[in-house]
Length: 472
Image (cartoon, rainbow, N blue to C red):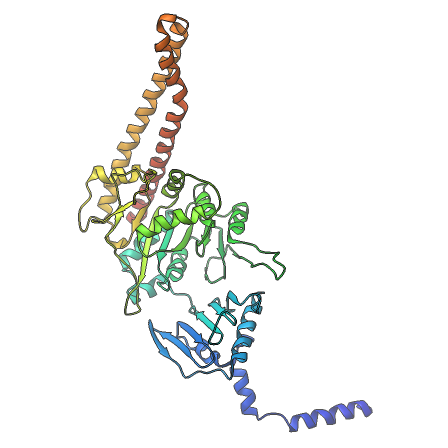
């Protein structure tokens, strides 16, 4: 028996049911809910796999991108208030806020799609919302080959580089496909390695089972609680990572990334906004300076030269397609890349593969002996024969450096003996001062040679690893 209360409740529910909206309207509301979140009129666009980007310029203007081409959609919001509600719901999902005090936000959807939103008073013509969608099934290297982003030969080369633990920097302009390429490169990481990913808004889709995903956090309304990318990079070093993958370097975390790459975390990956390899190196220097650590230019360039092994340049073409492009630039082999003369590290003409102007063996040896990063704009053009020449040249350079170290050690020993014998003789005071200077300079000179030996040995090992992988 329901009793009086139960009867009243039953009657009230019956009355509510009789006044409910038509069943079709309820179904439409259900269709507008994506993964438990209501995105209003944007839901059909987010469910459409052919759309790669959604751009909302106020409630009455919604553009979409399909295959690199922009078109104006028929989607409209009922009001700016509805658009702002959708934006706030999206931000709330990842614990972020957007209001008058904080009218901009970077966040993500549950599927990892990247979101940027701006509301009044900054957005003058209504709230603005930009959603960079990601495929539900992450693109594979075969997909990129099919799209024409790179060739099968380039894919094989890059796979070998990742497995050989090269530190790789994917450079490109806005919308050039850097994150997609980073995702594909990360798919080459063996499953038995521990990978730590660090992002502002999580969008990487790694398939490896042994991974830890970290995401930065903005400050609360009282200004506390902020966790930056830099802090996450420092913390990641304590997590015993085999590789560190940073979604994008855009500030002072560049210094921490370089230090991680230089302290045993080879095989790390990241992206950077730059339109050419020349811009990539200079921008990386600028980002390091943004760390607030007062480093001379020479020290910064030495860090970059020893940390970055590959720069893969990516561009978005006028037809909307994304490509690993070929710019007329190469690392200048005859200039010390760590020299603090303020000149560019790149010079027009030629490329690493020698497809325009072949590089001679001494120049290639000088390129690697200087510790400069290897710029790969079209990796399929890298000839394994040239790589073998590089390895042979580096072996010769390494022998030369080791001979210099042995000779310096012998000279130092002679200077110490002569000092003991003649140092007290007034007639040989000038000679004594010269010997004393030689002895004082020994540690610095030896340290320079040891660093060069370390770099050459490191690069020689990588060349051998790469050749073995290609042979297999």
